Image (cartoon, rainbow, N blue to C red; front, side):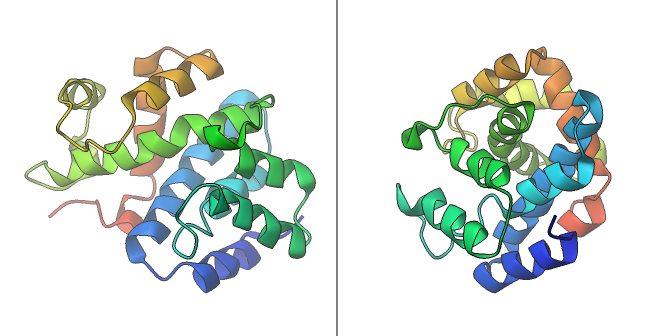
Length: 187
């Protein structure tokens, strides 16, 4: 199994944008938390979260993203079930999400970005001030973070068999653990 430092170096090689790197860190944290909840290996799930969008900066258009990430990961000897998880997070590739890891990656991907957006509009800009109710309220505002699919967030929780509020709480808690790294520890 590739180590986290190798995965991090690969991410940094392909991703220069600080915001995309922070997204990867947030997804990694959420994946680790779900691995703990669902009986997976936190290191394995975390690495999948870390590298899931490593091609996005270079190849943002479908179907290149995340197909190119899959090719890169295969070229570096990543396990095929990790590659499959990365590919499955894009609906348009029609890779069915079958394993808990695949379902978790899809479930946390959009939600982490939405939670960041909610934190950034708080006066403190802190994840510590983000609550489930504030996320749910912002989800109803279609103009807020309009690019984030509310349907994907809901479908992700449903696929995991987790109530939406519990899903949001799990991801917020995971992200709070790395708030400094995300630049969202507050002002």
